[in-house]
Length: 140
Image 1 (cartoon, rainbow, N blue to C red):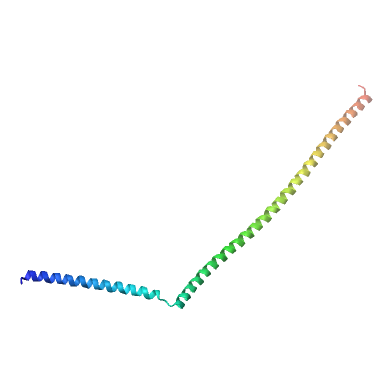
Image 2 (image 1 turned 90 degrees about the vertical axis):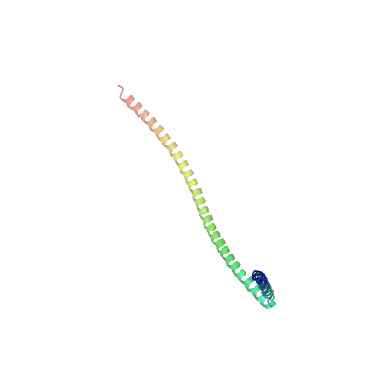
């Protein structure tokens, strides 16, 4: 046999063995992965229930905390609303009282204008009468 042919045959056999070894390794690895997954799904029902119960309990705690924060925000908002409502009511009452006071002052001012005009006209009338009396006593 030719040494080159022998080396070539040896190379082909080595490649075949290597290929076969890799395939066996991949097959064993895939089988092991599938076995591990299969075993993980075979959790006893009690452990699975306990796990689900703990998970549900954690979710409930988170949701309860969230609900409590929302309720506190709602309570604070209602308090602010009530305070603002009371302040608005007080402001409206003050505004109404000031409007009434303004109306009363306007009426008093009108009454005083009327009295002032009457006093002025009475004064002018009295001044004219006084002048007439002075003129009639002292004819010039």
